[in-house]
Length: 340
Image 1 (cartoon, rainbow, N blue to C red):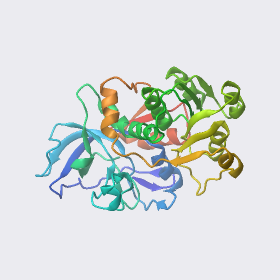
Image 2 (image 1 turned 90 degrees about the horizontal axis):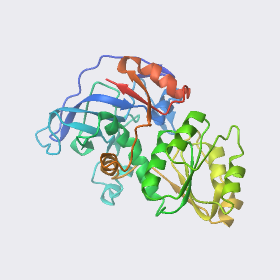
Image 3 (image 1 turned 60 degrees about the vertical axis):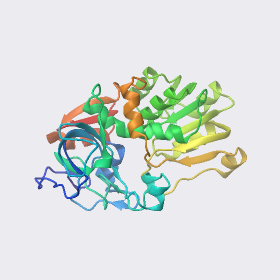
């Protein structure tokens, strides 16, 4: 549990109990550390969502079903499942409009004021948040389905990108998920930037035609040299103002800017001159909706291979060490997996 800024302690708590007919109790097997978890660890908040200590984070999980409520039909004890951390009400206007990711009463695992996270040996979640992991996939795949679903949804939200020239600024797990999903949808050339050279090497391995480090390169100049007319779509995946500025500068007139990254500040700034005159479309992305099963199926069928995503593993007892590694961007880290 988080107990303060960059403070974490292992605590004994009662096992969660099934209280509703459609509840499912899960013994966690693996948990992937997400950038938002690290925001709560290092900043104690994301925007207005502030941690009240002690608090358990974590939402990229997979495990095994150990008990179910009487009304559960989707899974049974012994099933391996991927955790979908969003728990909508299914009754509000947003849910009824097919936007249950922006549910008015949404509860999200590891989100302050909503629900404790799954950085715990056992959790209880609704049946609707349990997605069976196909037999040829591992618990790691189940955990990765959460960030991968965001990549799949981001690409889907950007429109038809078959044959498009695409930029991805920030190549953490979400940026990598966007690249993998964009390739499946037929993106023609993918340009990637990041401040960690090891991640850029991975982007090249995954099929990027260009990689650049903004600490060493003039990203706009180098990409413009290769694509003088500009890119069709750019995904901002790091939550940095300078990346947003670069994204605008490398887009063609009529291009689309997808803002996926979560910043630590409260307000974005955009150039009126460059966005208005070139009629740049701006689309914010909020998590994902209805893409978990798609992500699992893409991995099951081999359309997407995530073998390069997990770079580090830690036992549950060393979770704080794992969070420090991710927070400090050490050792070329991409995705850290916690083993329970």
